[in-house]
Length: 116
Image (cartoon, rainbow, N blue to C red; front, side, top):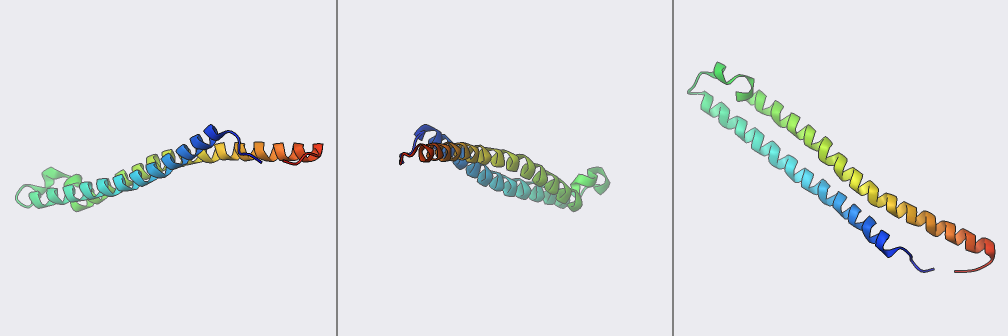
């Protein structure tokens, strides 16, 4: 039986590849943002040794740096992960519809006594 709807198969594959690419980029961005935020906070701690530490507040300390890193990482995981999952699910949904059409066509042909 021939494969029909080549354009839909291509679109489904593109969506799946985009989903995987967005997931990989999200992971790289999470690592980069966490490193940048954490190292930036460490620089604030090093600068505070000569200045008044109370003026810097919570976000000038190591604890503040860790909290900001944790918060930004969680936000990126939720946002990027949901986009990646949605793109991949769209590709799988297209493949599901194609498989449904294929199975329905085979069933009709079998009921009519034709082979494919």
